[in-house]
Image 1 (cartoon, rainbow, N blue to C red):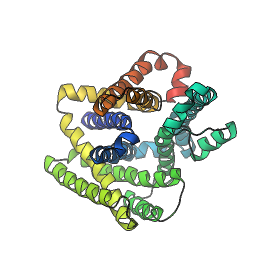
Image 2 (image 1 turned 180 degrees about the horizontal axis):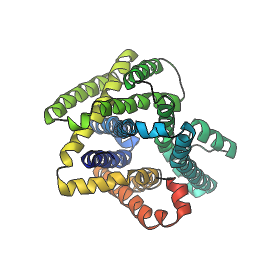
Image 3 (image 1 turned 60 degrees about the vertical axis):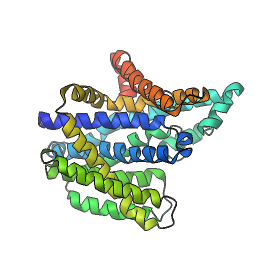
Image 4 (image 1 turned 90 degrees about the horizontal axis):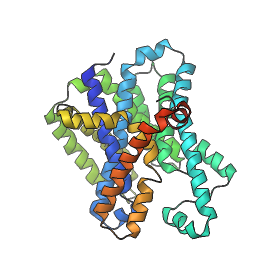
Length: 342
């Protein structure tokens, strides 16, 4: 059994990450386009929360390697299919049906235009679910990529994590110069972070985190952010090949260090652990209708951006928690369809 202190740290990390996810989604692209400060904040949030989830998954995978080896590859993939693919298909179908209804009502057509949704036929919808090309609900990429990364890691379970990090870094660099499907480059990018997590577990990094290391990591992250921001629209792609992965790794490490500090603050830690334990249902349910829907409505009321983000982010966190506790988990069918075997 993984040590309780380590579990607490990882749960706190997931709690922080899911808060960043929800509030990051509450900051719309339109809002970010009007302010360089908001744009930088939004971008930095994205460089921290998703890498943290994959790093945590890698740490847990590294810890449970022996147990995974005792079971067959097919059994592992079957379990992960239930965890990730069933909710992925369920929420994709739900989004497709809702957006199709919106498209069929002339008075609501402006919503599709404002949200950037494009009409899907049934065949296009099925194709998008399988390939993740022009997806109906683009926040579900995380679920699909996590499934692919988990399957890859189980298939290559005996390969040294350092070799996998090197391979993924090379492939990630190649992706800077190749036009590849989103699902491919995201799988490669976050598999790299996942294996960083496996390596950290091998080196027992959670028991060796120090505040001074946090400051060093923060300095490295800030430097990577500055370089990435400066070269964001540059033709010098090789800078991104080097600095972008560094920013992701530093971002994940910073969040883990912060979690190790906050886990000793009992009241804060308890809230964050609860959020971390429920991060999957929050992630699945907060988009695209709760957070984006609220942000869209509040934005049309011409409220200050900080109010829009605060209100939609808070409600986008609380509503999934309520739905999960009082509805989803009360019925085995809804639990299976919406959460798999989570």
